[in-house]
Length: 103
Image 1 (cartoon, helix red, strand yellow):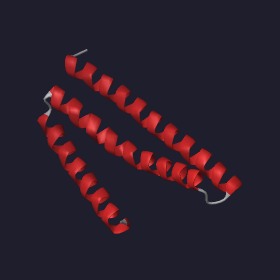
Image 2 (tube, helix red, strand yellow; image 1 turned 120 degrees about the vertical axis):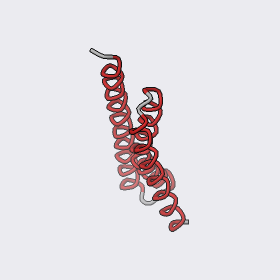
Image 3 (cartoon, helix red, strand yellow; image 1 turned 90 degrees about the horizontal axis):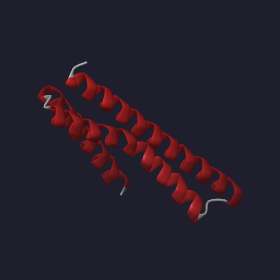
Image 4 (cartoon, helix red, strand yellow; image 1 turned 60 degrees about the horizontal axis):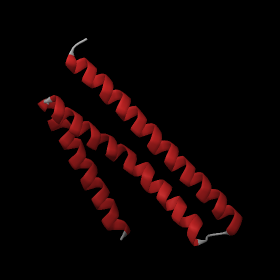
């Protein structure tokens, strides 16, 4: 097995763990927030926990792109670095525009 194949295998494992952790954390926050919100009404804790769950859920793919970018730079795979930078820029612009509409 070549070094680049091993690096890609490690990247896939790392990204899989990152996605699992992000989704599970978001699901726990959303579940707890929903239970608290249903039990006590629209209180601060329930709303804050629901918001945190949604933020974690949205941040998970962004973190995936960031981790991929670092891994591709380390592997010196410039095509994927360029592609990942473009994806990261598009995600950043999209989140910024969405944030500006909310605020």
